[in-house]
Image 1: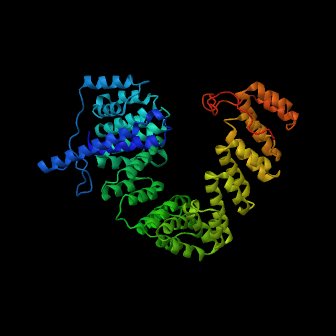
Image 2: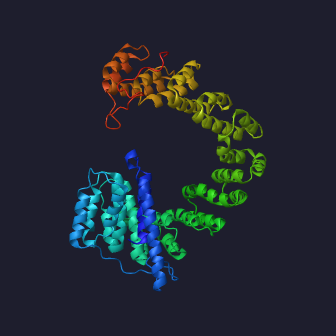
Image 3: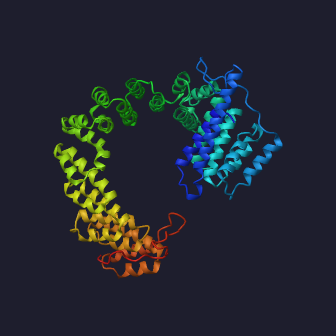
Length: 531
């Protein structure tokens, strides 16, 4: 198994894992990654050793001509051995493998001949274990890209498994294998794909986008000549992002030139410019926050400067807090309000008095942003203390702040949260706090959430929340829910009839209700009898 293909396989698998909700039984993935890194290191050492014995260019090594020097690719195991590997893949369903066993199976897949690729692809595509499927797809399409990239591409384009993770992993690995075998062929395909204008195949266009994105994001060692050819082959709307990706992999790149080039590619498209503004700000700010600010003022429209100011402030305050704060305090109101968001990390560590002191030096818009950030950060750590911050939040932002505070408090201590909510004066702010608590309680204690929802004063919000929560309660305990609906005086007869007629809500995840604290199932107790 060659090193570049192995790197692409590991990369694609890692990306897939980032999208999957892994349970504890897959914790061995970390040791698999370590094993892959160890094997890759050994492979690099082997290649280096061969290079000292015989003066030849190893496969995957960049040449002076801007391409790859491609050697012959191993034909793979015999037909009988390949059939045995496919049978092993077929028998994988329902089995649990150790990291070592999975890594050995990946190695086997990487040794398959072209004759067995389609059959192996069908077996892997039917794999119900998404983690195994992602790893195996990465290995298969990396290998298939070396042997017959066009056949591999057609197979992916026709994939109807409905698994976007596996398809993305396969595309990323195919791109790596194809570049191993024939970089000129890959780039030619990328240029030709979609060249038919209105007649272009949308599936092929999607495949081109995924493969180019994977290559530019994951292959930092590609030479600049090949990278430029890939960017030129990409759809126009993808080029700014690819240019920024390339720059992040090149420490010698001039960030100012890179960002200007990305803007040039974006042209007059505001959506394209918006998509690169934050990253442009980050790239510039990491080099020199003051240069980032200067760039924003010279090259960005006023409405575009928010992300760059925020990124610059975030980087600047870490490098030189005194200078950063001096600059911030001297800015006009709008610039100050944009830049102050970059202080999120600083605000996180401040207590109430320190936040008050900071906001005293800022103009109203920026001060409001700081109080809101401080409230959010404090609500996550200590909701009871966050209550003190609410009086400093603007009336427009206050309902959302009450919702967020109530949600966080309910996560940590539902009984304390309910006592606080119950103490509030009726009105919009209390309704917002109830809404936050109801949303958090809904899946765990639908009886409590329904009763709380029925106390919301705004009629439209009350009907929406009660209907949703009562139907959850009907699903959990139809008898108790029906009894409450019929008995309560907080609902109109018409709404009672509509809720009961609608019936229990459909289960969102197999109809299983989470166990309550203490391991007991069934309806939980009401957290507060006040409503």
